[in-house]
Image: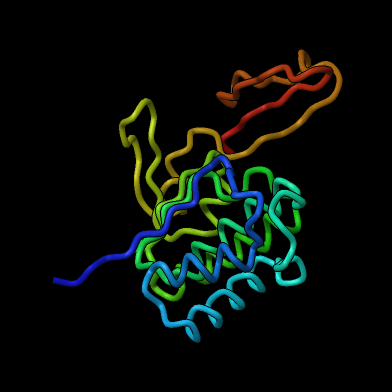
Length: 190
């Protein structure tokens, strides 16, 4: 029977302050049974993928929250696991780091890796994964490809309106209107 390796990236980042991103990626790969040479290669590749190579020797206590998160993601990537469980992997990351991590995760999917991703950001799920499951109160309420899931949405478009929406005949289009500060968000089918 083949052993399946699973790597986990929790939502909340709790790093050891004395560890560096390099140590996370390298030593955790050694703990998974990699040779020193392979662990070095995997650690370097993972740190470069999440754009932490230049910070590889800084202790985690000196890193920002997003950099710590990327160090944890790099350690998971370096493990070369069969299955990756990622809980809100891009939360706390700036826009550039978020794009970078999403691209890395999408590349893993294209390589045939299995990713179980928890996210509230539909754009992220659509960009990274080939199949989605939508859960509500612990139950799967929809599953399929991103396109199949999008077709299930009652309202496909969102229009932001400033000013008075009373003059718009929104009811005839089956639209839903939500006040958001001084603006109105109108959800429509087409």
